[in-house]
Length: 140
Length: 374
Image 1 (cartoon, rainbow over the protein chains, first blue to last red):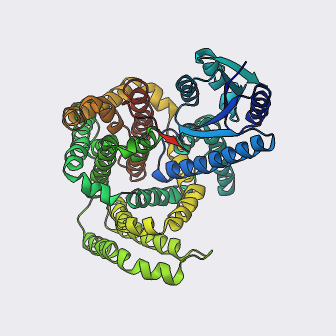
Image 2 (spheres, rainbow over the protein chains, first blue to last red):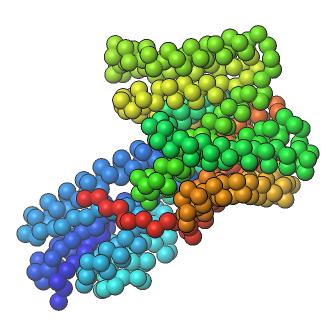
Image 3 (cartoon, chains in turn purple, brown):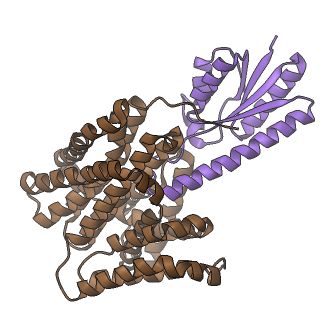
């Protein structure tokens, strides 16, 4: 049913559940599994370069860690995960990557780790669902 | 309100600002200014002499860090273009704001000079965040933007230091000691860092603080401002900090944890919402003067340098934050501008950090190859 699955990762508890669901689906359907972690926006309107540099370094380290953990988790369940990282707007990047890669399912958490996203009615998940080129599975 | 309760109030505002900044992805500086405005206008948070003193030192440390963050190699590589664009980007809004506030708004010449300096700035950090996020920092447009912003910053620091000098014998001492420091720091600091560096007691930070306090003291004696020598001292130390990045991080930690929050919160506390409400027309006009002067001067040049991305380039050159706030706070604390004038200038400065950036990112973002890591 699904041959190529994309799971969106952001390091939140919800995205862990999305990863678990994606791994299970990939194993069930013998599908190819890819992950995409998008480093979101840097602090807007910063006062010093240091603030920007350190935020970027923190994001780099954070996303490298979640990529590594996701690959290990998938491997433990007998699935090979192909991780990818990008910079920019998470919704735009996920939709664009799914289009380019010819995916037939996107798996993602219903909300991310920041309060701003959690309370934002038109958050990342909503935007992805609205614009995705394929089926989407929202994991709660 | 006792001094200790003032400290409690400011510490609480600083903590809340950090939480809001992390949760909403907005720079800590703007949140600190906004919460400072709210704390003073709605909750009666007052200031104390030590707060003003720490805020003034925070502004000098910020200026030093701005100098230390200059990429001198980049500046050399784009020297001609950045000198032209950065110079015009400083001069045109400076003259426009000076003339507008004096002749149209009736401000004194000295107050108008503060307005000119505060509204002439371009925010290097605001520009840098946009460039890193889009990957444009690696392309020519990004490099030219960064180096032109260094030049505009330099113009601001120069103007702030020179315009308000009262000629006394101390000015000679100030200039000579500043020049000696700027010349000696890169020479002695490699030895100093080797001999005393990498310790938890941080002799390197103490050396920098000593030099900056000395500059402030001499600046005050000579009725000038330490902002230019502090910027140049940072510039002189920039290569050293590139080689000792950990030291730069430690200095940032001290600055961000204690000094800059007090500077930005104090700046916000000075803003009077009542004064803003009574001068909404002037507020809009000042913002318009800054934007029109930047666009009118930078856009024609940018067309020659970056072609179809010239509007994006110009809008980012129209941003301002740190130096605009520093200039305004200096003017207020030196008694050159009053609370209403300060409120107007800081509000325009904050608006100029946000509005041109939003417009540039939303409608004029250059098409770039997607940046991928991993």
